Length: 339
Image (cartoon, rainbow, N blue to C red; front, side, top):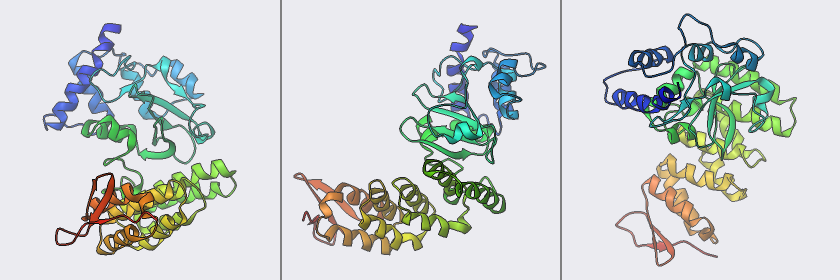
């Protein structure tokens, strides 16, 4: 059994490669499991059997349907091998983790995937987000939903790399306002956001931040003004998240609020706001970055403004230990103001 499990990662890696080449297309968890079963290289449970009782014990009842299906057909893998992510053996599944956001304990969660880099993925087992996938990155653990289902997360794994999946770059389904193709309709997303928002009014500060984080991920683009308003919240983390979302959503109306966030100089939020202005890449955003660079004390933010300038279509470079910028090749180089 151990030898067969050690081959799971290499097999999964080959299937991922075939999928990217267009040879195989997976649209859901059963399709992936069927392909693995066909290859006869994955330690399998009898398909006629139910998920192991130990999984029910972990959940204090029946596990979410997708989790039960996963462990009905396999008992996870002991190592990733060439795969991006591996399902944990049932004996290693973590229920209601006591690390990361407290919301995972409050609503209940099962962490059943890992990349063997101290990062985990799992699903909520209770609360308004039951069945949705949460990603716990060891540097930035967040309670926010990132995928609607395990099937959707596996599709993203097959399309990208584990770093992309764990950081939610490019292919995450949430935040909905920033998603190219929302996985949840606006009406359903709004209803979910309102349910979580109602809980936030009765929570303590830490729990409120967790709930607000979930709300920002759930708000559809039609309610982007509410995300924009979060740029003004007196908090270290919420404005930072809001800045990332409004820029990914291309919300040009957020520019004044982003500039105000830079001026406030609050940790995390100020740098996130600068980078968000660069991602907007509008004429107004470019003008704002040029103005920031010319202000006294701009040298403090020089590396971040320089990066934002490049994203916005301006030019910047580091020469002789100092950052320089210009609007285009038709303009002279200027150094950032240091005082």
